[in-house]
Image (tube, rainbow, N blue to C red):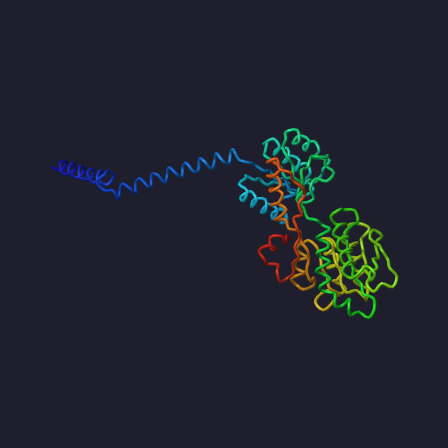
Length: 373
């Protein structure tokens, strides 16, 4: 009897199941079919996505480093470009910017993968020449970014995505001039604008310094400016009401940089001072520790780049502002150029721009990613 009752119950359950899954209930059938179809579509979509990824373009980006906030911002831009342009992007860099051999290993490994194109910021062009030739022989276009691949063989690098440092220096001058023009116009005697540069050999630093000096001279008036100090930019004019005083240390040492900055800060007619990179800006900050000459209501100080020390100086009001490169755009534009080059399009160097930041706009979504420590 018990077995018979179980059999009847089982039969009932089977009947209910047939009603639910068969034609007896159109609503139940529709939901089940929809679920099955959705699962099939999802599976098919994943297969299609995988096929597209396998058949699509792949861009390998080899940076100078990976631990620094600057390169993380470059990576952010590169990855965003990959998403926007529908290409696969991989981003690699050595442990530090002295690890030349490690960077070459990454470059060789990238070439072996036969990517659509490579974006490369060389730590040492000479050490990279063999790998670059291998890429050229394989027909893999190379795009330089940041400092690029200076002195590479003709035709090896299709284009570069980097900051136009001359224009960036001009931006620093324009912003500084707006802060001091009243002091210049209302001066009863000579006024001085100091410039501290790390060196006179590196192209990027030379251009940032030159751009500032030339633009400031233009804004003030060439007949009113005497450029003095370091021989690299000297253009003296007797009796000029405005002196641009350029200081460059003999060696790239913190103590030497601070000594040069101190010599300028100690001059009584100084109204503004500019540091053309992080080293120079930090030299000004260090020199001021014993002089207390810069800050709100005092000598106007401006810088270039970022870094923990300089960012704090801006937050504290010691620096009125600074110019930073746009590493997000450097990464984005490098990948964009790589895709164009891979498509056989003509490409040329791109200025990735520079940004002026102050304590009031440091949290702006467009600026914050560019303020690396």
